[in-house]
Each structure stands twice: as structure tokens, then as C-alpha cells.
Image (tube, rainbow, N blue to C red):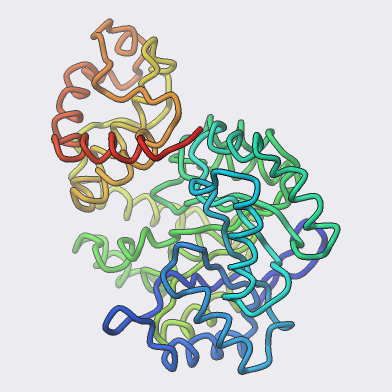
Length: 392
């Protein structure tokens, strides 16, 4: 196993264990199976384990496994505060203490504000006194590092990055999302501030392995490197020095062993021009089904009505490069949960965006198509319901 450092120079395995996808049977985690997988990872040097309050049964399972194998001190636990559920200062301790009990520990190594989508999502717990709460917990040794996980656009990520003295952050990043969400720009901005970056969704939930187009699979199989689809995705990430740790939701011993093998030999800066060309070839095959030729350059921005045009087109395309549910869910998550929501329906067809688009996309026409596909009536209902319970 190879290691990179956190903000305080502690070693972090470049492969982290994502504990959201433990195998379940009858709605409950198969504890014995999860234990074999976790212990295989620990025995091979994995020392970063990521869970969250809302991952059903995950914190409890991880706590039990670490306790009965007496290996709590060998690993770092990362878990997340459901900040979207916090309505009072007292709730901060209530949720945190419950998590300590679930995890059978008296401290958390890496504690995250879960799923920040914009600055407003951070400002809400700030009004409840969370910064002072964090200070006290760090002084008491109950929280070692404080960070946040992010789902939003690059501009919002950069604002959140500057809003507090974070110890680390967690972003969705892979070769398809190189310029999406926080993107490469966000990754580099965090690194420039000395903030370690944990990567989630390196395989897009398995999409960069299981759902690759046939021609992409053929290209990978015929490449002289001999790397698997997963290996290409992981090595692309570890090639970048700004990446601290890559999470993988491993749910078989063989998967753990394969990923550990890759994490033991992958090198920073190892990619050649031919390797990058290979990644571009894979992306080209994946993008054969895109509906809008948007490169997310953002020359169309800012929209006078506040519409996030690149995000709308990315999610619309994702409906056809992956599946409809994935695209709609991402759009609902990123746009629907922002305080200042400005979705596609607010377009007044002023045409300003089109005058700046280097791809000469008929943006007004394509936004109408995107709205029709991304926002069927039942999704609009879901957004309204979710926003009723979203307190800023």
C-alpha cells in the first residue's frame, strides 16, 4: 500500500474503503461478509474508512468489526454529520454522540459536513454555533480533522473552500467528471491551500466498468498496458498529486485484493501521452450518445436568470450516456437543493448565452429539451417536497 499525507502529515492510504455499499440480505448488512472484506483491506494497509450517519447500518457494522478485531487504533474513521437535519445547537451533540456510540469509539478522525451543495448549506449550521462547537470538539480530541463532502458546481465549491479553515474535503471526481462539480479546478484550488482531497465515485458507481460501451471495452482489452477498466480509472486519479485518497465501495474480497494491488503499484505522474489518449478514446465512446455538445467551458455564464446551463446540459447528457434516473437525480441534487434555486424553467430566452457559446449550440432550444427530459411532473413534485424540509 502507498500513502499520502493529510494536513497534519499523518499517512493516509491512497485507497480508502467506502462503507456505503456493504452487501445486504433482507435489509440488513451481512456482517460476517463485510468483516472479511474489511479485515482483508486492513491487513493490506488500507487505513481510511468512510461512512455516514445516513448509510443504513454502516456505522454500526464498522464499529462492531473494528471493536471485535481490536484494530480501532490501526485505522482512521471518516463519518459525516447530516447537517441538513440539524435544527438546533443541541442537535449537534445528539447526532455526534449517537455516531460515537454506533462506531464504538470516543473520537472521529475525519468528520465531514455531509453533502454541502452551496454556501447557504454551510451558513445554516454556522448560525447554530457549529464553528464554536467544532473548536471545542477538536480541543477535547473528539474530532481530529474537520471537512465537508460536496455536490454542486465549481463556483460553489470554491466559495465553500474559502468559507472556513477546513482540514480536508471530499469530492466526486473521475475522468468523466474532470470538469464537472468541483472538477479539476476545485481539486487544484484545494491542493493549493494545502487541503487534502478525498475522492468519491471514482468509477461513477461502477458505470466506468460495467456500463462501458462495447468499443471502449475492446480498446481497453487491446491496450498494451493490460489494465482493467477499473485500473484505468484509479490510475488516472492517482496519477495526480493533488489526489490524497480514492474511496472504493468494495463488497467482495476479490475486489479488495484487486484494488489493493493497483494501489500498491500505481505511480504519480506515470501517465504517458498514449495513456491520456486512451482515456480520451474511452470518453469519446462513452459520449457517443450525448444530446448536447457542451464542453462545460462556461462561456455562456453567468445567465441573467441564474440558470446553471452547463450543469443542466451535463445532467441531460448523463440521462443518455448512463441512464435517465442518474441524470435526473444529479440535477435534482445539485439544483433543487440550492437555496437560490434557478432551474431551467426560469429561462426567458434572452439569447445572451448563445452569443458567447464557442460551440454555437442552440442553447435556448436545447434547454427546452433538457427541461422536458430532466423535470417530468413527478420530479418537480419531489423537489417541492424536499425544499419544504430544507432549512437555510
